Length: 153
Image 1 (tube, rainbow, N blue to C red):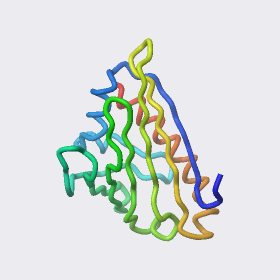
Image 2 (cartoon, rainbow, N blue to C red):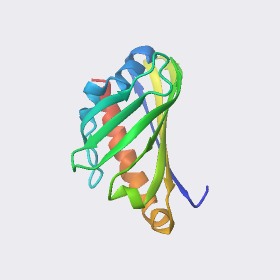
Image 3 (cartoon, rainbow, N blue to C red):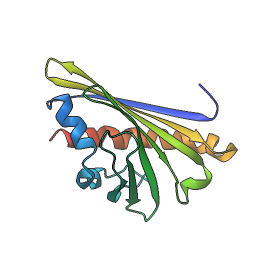
Image 4 (cartoon, rainbow, N blue to C red):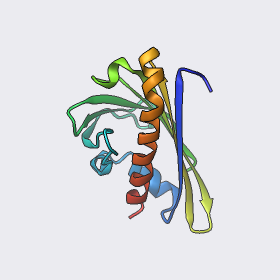
């Protein structure tokens, strides 16, 4: 593992078909259902800054519950198998710690519906980020696992 990258992964079997689950991911009205975990803030609101017909290149502005913000860009959209988003443009306190995050959603058919794997790569902006981002990744993994349970409801 690169000393500049912290990683976390969570998996869950959901009852929804992959196509429906992927559509829920890009439904920005649902984004406030991400409640965070510990010091990881939940999402207050999200809106498309730019939405492309093909998905790739779409940009979403996010404001978190603590007032911080960032932008998420769809860098890969391959329904019903995967979605990759790049988070950047972080406001403080994350701005000095991370250059960007990469979130990957991988979906596969399963007996009970769809097997979803959600992973994050947190790229450090410097030595402080290399120290702090492993803890941030762990907390983000907890928040993402809870969020995936709630997305299936």
